[in-house]
Image (cartoon, rainbow, N blue to C red):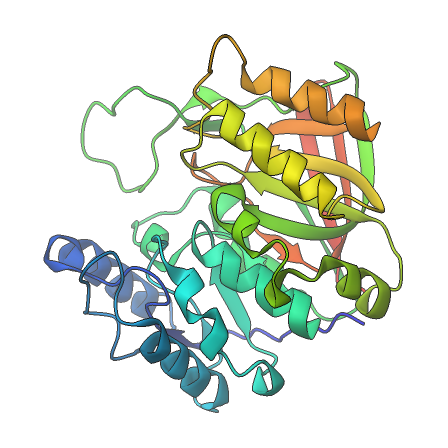
Length: 338
């Protein structure tokens, strides 16, 4: 059974640096995010790890795990949003007290997606793949990214509909200052391997493939147990995004996931836009999507609104979802179904 945390206006956000902290170069950016969230009526509670950053992490894994556990048990903290992603969240997984994880939303992506996936697989508590705390610092927020609040506020048993963005962040730089964090100037088009309209239904699971692949075969990546004991054999929709892997590294990772049984009882796979996917010997992202679709005999949708190329929807690990693509435009409807 999947359980869903609650979200309310004026919530107290606990910020703990589960991966990267805020170094000297990021203090102004992070400070803007804190000020903006307070202006929107949220309380912001900063952990001791936030302003630490050294050797590719905010603090040792044990210290990060302890602070995460403390925020989970602190009744004054309503939800947890790390500052941003990073590299070595995996070091803290063994120090999380999974038996005492509370029904609190955890929101983030990139390296944080490993925390999200692990929590949902181990506990059955839904987690939210969406913007990081630092992404919410703009005076204004685009419609796609701003949906994080409405998604998290969906009651258990309810549903929420999100639409594909009109534009995403391209390579062109803006002409001048902007009240928005992201500069959305490239047309969005969701694509399918089949070249046809597609519809997929199932329970959402996923994250950044660079990171989540590393828990395959560990106690933190027991998809088989999750499938059998928590969602009782319902089909899974995997959503995956690539930060910086080249195409053959993504391909190797997907083959490993298949051999590990992660795609057993899968109804389809979603890929977010990527700034990675550098081709190797003419092997392109489109090639690897096609290979995966043919191997699994499943629909594959790509160039979707999540991951490292903004903006991004908020996807809930564990939620039942209906994903549709029609003429390059798409919808994602999530049901907060137990």
